[in-house]
Length: 209
Image (cartoon, rainbow, N blue to C red; front, side, top):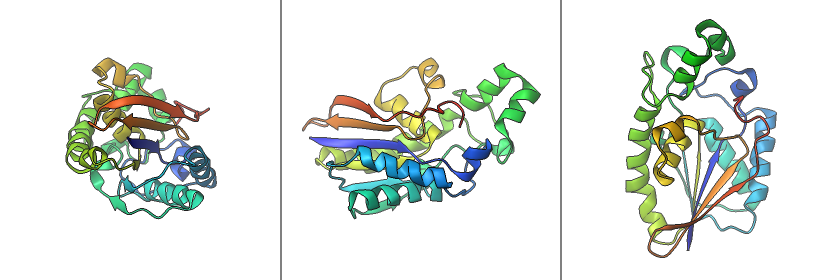
């Protein structure tokens, strides 16, 4: 049986400040490094054969810290298909200030909407359309071979992937939160079917990042 492990990167310096970062390459904060070590503690005893990350340092460094904690050295593949959502005109802006400016309803559509247009950026549907084909073509075949795969990515790329994996409705995925510090483990049978889902850890600040 193979395992697919999904995790969101540890807190970045801009998560801490409440800034939308999208494709801007922001490093982990000190707490983010501790987040990664904590996530690694949840995975002790699980062999990891391959790692996939986005091209952004906060996801890459989270994976590397976890592997150091586990004393493992599997190959790491970086691909922009797993990048965070591009927030376009909202990149580098404080999300809570935007909420005050546009109101809660519009803010939630910008932040969580499936197909809400964001000037110069992406919505969740756009992210889904790059994440899922990459998973189907590059990662799932490895799972079917019985390999344990870890994906270190971002709130929105993981929301898109979980919509696919968990067969979520649009409404469900718009309300889905992916917490910093949470680890999602999917166990597959020998035919490549998910037979178990687990959530390890809990982000006490879920919804604030």
